[in-house]
Image 1 (cartoon, rainbow, N blue to C red):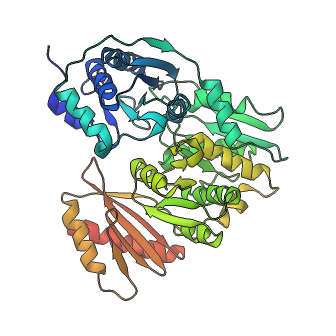
Image 2: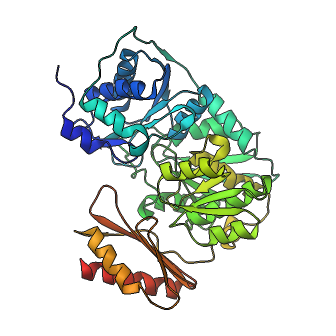
Image 3: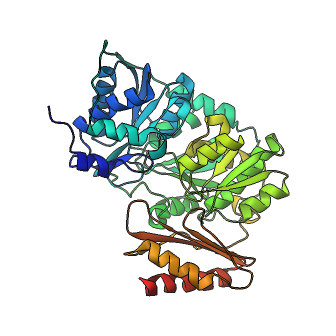
Length: 457
């Protein structure tokens, strides 16, 4: 019996997950083979499986379950779920998991996010390569097949989040939530529905689950996808706006003026709240997060630890350091009390809790946490990313007051500015993030580095 095409398998197994076009790359035979291999690699007696609202997701999830049962594992199907709800299920049940989603990617994509028990990530260096190899060259299975059962964990998930971040402040809030037709349309009503009457007036946008994304792509890191939310916040006089990506593991925030809040500022806000609970704790930030974050953590007596970009690196560093919290400028926020997994909804609840405890507007609250202008991520298509990165390093090496490091791509730092250039894992792109003491400095550095990148290419 022929299995999935080895070339396709190698193409869709990425650094942190499985992702590709449906049905050309991701189909039910691939999902079934991956389910069998995942159960074999993890040695799981039970696996939990969830899926998003994409039309192909239920069938792919069922095929994965069939493969896992072939390998002898029982399967708990939780049905429609956000990715952080799948992580909750993995931690709550203490079993490995699989989430069928392509996150913020367009409608023609799908994929699988895999983890070990307690939401421990499965990356290419921690088991994903072994699963890929077993999909290409299957190992025979023996013994009795497992069974599939369905369990509804939505209410337990919502209750757990509100235990971690209760909204105890006295101020009632008007909150606009843009689910982007993604999974926050499923989870937000469950979470906000548990709050006392009058605590939050919810203004829903695009809560209808629709994997064709009829209103805008569920990728709020792109400014165009925030415009509807920004307009609705201003129009309704809301206190805050929340935007989630397709699988709702990322959250972006808009203030009462309709202005997007920097994820670095949200990282700083959550770090301050977590350090109030556990003074002296460690907080993780990745290397494109604003320098304001480690400055604030030190100021509050905490220990900032810098890491590479990517959830598997952050989660591993959190485990090594017992960090209480980790934040990425991409909108991922990780919580020790949530099995070190990322949760857009937990981040949102922190923002709401902070706002409910003050009479100040969100813009004022965040201004003190966001002192340095950031360029945002700027991508340049580059044929030879290594050569161009080396040319940028050579241009800055030896300058007065400048330091270079290569933890992840190239980071160049000065007392007044910093920038990082990193190659994409999947495309011929160099990603630039720049920051300055003021806007003029940031823009000068940004433009200098961009000119150099594009000239060298």
